[in-house]
Image (cartoon, rainbow, N blue to C red; front, side, top):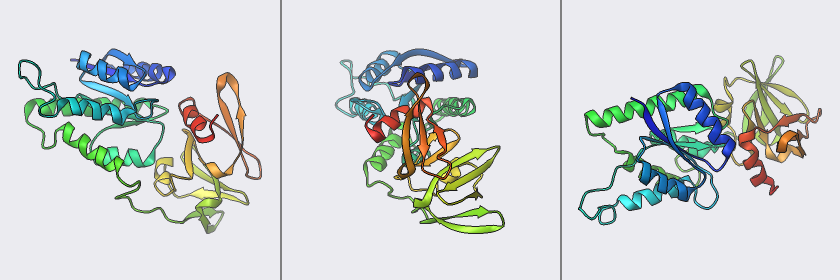
Length: 280
């Protein structure tokens, strides 16, 4: 049986991309789409979907505010209808984020699924299967931690001091340059790029390779206040961006301040974050 799902995202292209991927995965019926938090609350109450793909960063009312609003309606004394019946439970929530490393870790700890932008088909399929498995478990036996409890914990964690419960990043990283293993200050790294499974780390004076296997693994070691995943294949140090270059169809490229003044594309999903960073 197909899962009913809503897609809530303020970017039309992101909604279309996710809809296309869900259709290719199969087993999901898109019952509605919304572009902001207010629409999200109304659509969830109206459609009562099994699953909601909810953007984290939206103008006015973000994804967390949507969850808080829904939970407030379900609290004792506020959620019961005129006939005294309790309100419907929350649907399964899959958060979407343009890459907030701290939030992603919080979602994982609290067993609430997430998707990173730009979306990946395999990851979308995994999120759907995880939601399907949780729904099946809820139908056969009561969950040890209902989703409302998990989301409460998530919201408390995200509203607390940034970085609480997270191991601090090392001040320096090991970068292999030919036969040498160099200790490099994070602030000196201009960007990192992955190509055929090899991560290249570039500074203003030299470049080498990281022992990390993925950019996600490398980002766990980097300061999220400095480093931003501008594209699926690139992580940049925002303090080493020399120029923001307007590009084709309202897209952008970043010209870095390394020796080659490397130009790095900004993915469509990350354009919003770029505008936030530099008030474009």
